[in-house]
Length: 181
Image 1 (cartoon, helix red, strand yellow):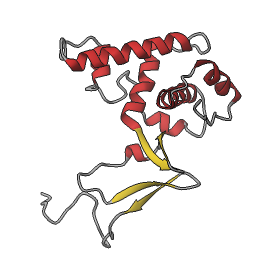
Image 2: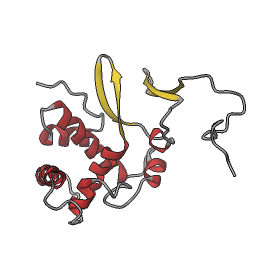
Image 3: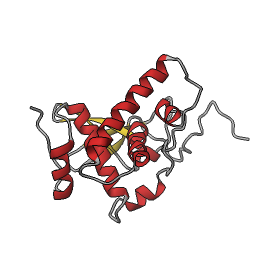
């Protein structure tokens, strides 16, 4: 049996106990999806972050195979990518059908929550385990092929640590080898 740390919200805890898988990876994804769906519909400390998230079903990742298949795009018809996306969509539909018994949410919104996880989740090593998590703010940080920062777990949450010395007056993306016109 997988040990689980259930949320303190009794409403979510009850649903998770009835709905989720015993497979750790599936459970984590289901728990985050449920939390997203529940939080997105309520005013909370998370509301400013939710206000900045894409509202469309692809959650800002229109090129995700799942979103393309959901919109019945012909771009991947007959490919292994389409079969993989169809398989994921079938799995999500099955999970959604089970969840509907406990929580009222549309399938489109359920797929939206999966797209948020697909495009904004991170993994962090915590106490010898690698945990999947959402780290608001980090998902809005610019990405670089040569990053100068790392996200690390702390007892309080996470922190962004500089990997290199940041020179005084450093201007973000402006590098010595680039010219700004």
